[in-house]
Length: 544
Image 1 (cartoon, rainbow, N blue to C red):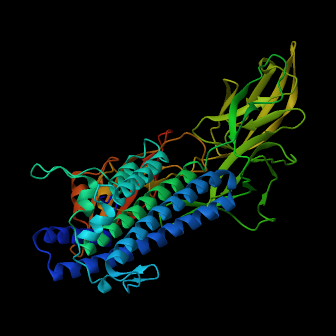
Image 2: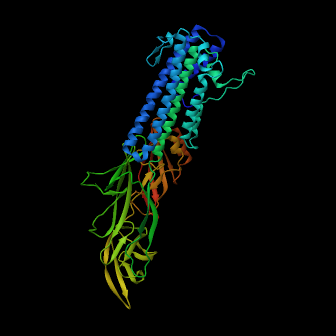
Image 3: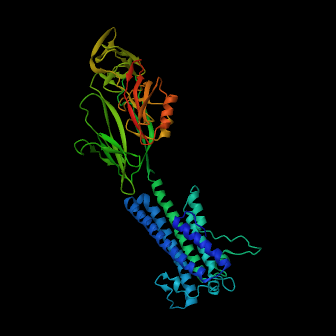
């Protein structure tokens, strides 16, 4: 049998075993026989270490099944059966080793102490008859035949637990538990049994059988690792699918259309997530992953909602009109007892009993951009609604309106309803008007203070102007000029660019900077859609 994935220690012991087998073919010296004792002791230690590591996996199966018996229970049952079969095959080989040693050394031999074999105490290390007598047999009916079938049955069982896509796992198991006959040598055809037990010294046979036990533990490790991964692979499986209808609005006036999204949603009723409502924040872990957490104190700044069949129920009384944003985190317990946190955001519109004027983006209008608003009067068709603005212009667009204010300050949206040849005022709603916020400078998606590899920096065309996350408009600023500074040879060197792209001189500077140094992208000028230029500042990047 050969190894699949091996530790450095296993590789070293395997190499020693091959060297000794080669020496054995040339010379059965006392030194070679004693060396087999050392290799057998190393294999025994390797088997103990492998068994301990496998036991850790079995403990994880126990924890997973206790946490979520529906998902992990079936995989634990398979792992328990693997453990039973692995121990049975290991113990069967151990009994064969005991039988060979006792037949050579006697029933009361000191070479067997409890379940441990002390190779130093074996006097007949060079005996080649007894191993063949037990394992080959005079009529080729020795116990090696049963051993080969036991290994093949065990191998077939392990393979049956895997999917065809698990190529690496299957290949490793096949290699570890290989029982194929060796290729012919000088015209002589040998069986697997003959190669392993015929004309070999007793100590070499014992060592070889220890190697078989080590291979069994390796194959056991491969399959239980695979089975445990299947629990995680199925951790997002769902056991309930329900239709969900989300209407664009539950209030439809005469002449308008009712619109809704209809789809199937999947749930996991075996898990009860925790749904937190409130503001959340995030941080970057040492592994580079984003970790989300709720801000403030529970009960004061955020709280949870009831959960039934895997679904949270959020209810809140509408106390003021306009668009309301809300969100939070859904926290789901993993099999290892830790939690995975997923953020979510949503918004809804609260309307007064009559006139409704609400911005579709924010409660603010911005200069130089299209500000969409939805205007409706309950019970009044959209074609009878007249909207006007005291700051800039308002024009129909699709199912709403676009407001383009011309000055900062405030903007009142007034609404009237056409009734025959007359109009009736429905009131007005005030909004604030502000300039579009400045973008900030980024490089490779990173903000100032980030550390980037030199290759990552050189892979960029140049700096970018990025709008704040909270700014919900699809608005883009273009960088038109900037300067790059870095310290080289004790002096600060600055090179300008009159575009958004690194110049040849700037790229030469970047190639020359040393890891640990900093580069400064300064005086970044960006142009917005209204044509105005803005100095959006500086970004400092540390070179990794």
